[in-house]
Structures are given as C-alpha cells and as structure tokens.
Length: 242
Image (cartoon, rainbow, N blue to C red):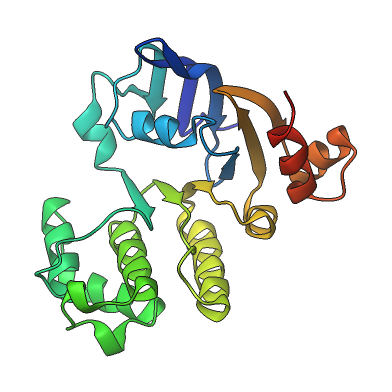
C-alpha cells in the first residue's frame, strides 16, 4: 500500500480551558476522498485550520507527503489548496484577475491556459470579467473552487464546497471533483452538512463529536454499526448522544 498523503497523530488543540480537538489520529490515502463529519463545535474547522498551518496544534504531529508540517510548512502548502463558501476573495478585482493572482502566488506556468480550462470546467465564462464584489453567492462559490483546482494540488481541502450552488451546478461540481480526482490522482479532504453529498463523495468517513473521533470507516460500515439507514440518521443519533 502507498504511503499516506497526510498523517495525523494524537492531535490536540486547546483554547484556554477548552479542548477543541482531543487526541485525534487519522490518515488521508493517495487518491482518496476522506469525509469529515460532526455537529457544529465538534472540531472540524479547527482540524482543517491546523492541517493548513493556520492554527498551531497544542500537541501532536501532522505530516504531509512524508514531511513534518511544523518544519516544512511552505514546501507542503505549495502542494495543497483550500476552498470554502466562508472565505472571500479580493472584491475589487475581477474573477480573472483573482485567478491570475493565485497563479502567480503559486508560481504557475502558462497561467492564461490554466485559467481558460478552469473557467470552462466551472461554467464561469459569462462572469470571468465581472468584479468579484458583484458576484452572486453561487458565482463566488465557483470562484473559490476555481482558485482551489487551478493549482492542481495533490491534496485539496473542501469545506461546504457546494453550499451556495443550485442543484444542477452542485451536481456538475461533484462530477467535476470526482473526475479531477480520477484523472490527477488528487486526494480530497471533504466536509459538508449535506449528508447525501457526503454519501456520494466519500470513500471513507471520520465522525467527530466533542473533539474526538467516535466512528470512522466506509458509509456502509458506519451506518451498519449504528443500525441506521443512512448517514443523516447516524448524524442525528451521534449529535443527540450525551
């Protein structure tokens, strides 16, 4: 079996007396879509922030591509990217200008061609020259996704990637992500509150509650373990447990 793309061991994050992440260990395998689930406050965002090097762990080890994140942060982050409906892009720039800036920050070559490809894939032609501040929420979501896949990352973090998209565009986006995963061998770390989407996208699921992993495995294994029909029923059962 190939070495993990990312490996997390005994990860802890405390904010004062509050423990947001409590001894979490997992790995992301090459070409895998790993889903991260849990109710609000379970620690999902904190884990993503630590994996992106934005928040420093209280304890534990994070390795990506065989390198320690604490010592090789810049080298690692050149190979990852992130998309979330909760982040913003510079509003005074057009869509294309934003993508050009991202390309230059990552030191990409042939930036115009890359932009043309990603704009076509995400059906952004009609607003590629529009100011970012004038975009709809769905258009902004597509821009953040375009920014994320423009750099051909080896590991892509997606936080609620289709939350503002209409059903048609959300379906096309999921299909695109699965195709990019197949063609480029990309690994994806995926979180969403859309349980059907998580069932469709995830090869494996990690379920968090109060900063700890309470279940992990395939969708089938987790639903069978909890005696439920689907992930939504599992989510409700875990979220309501005391």
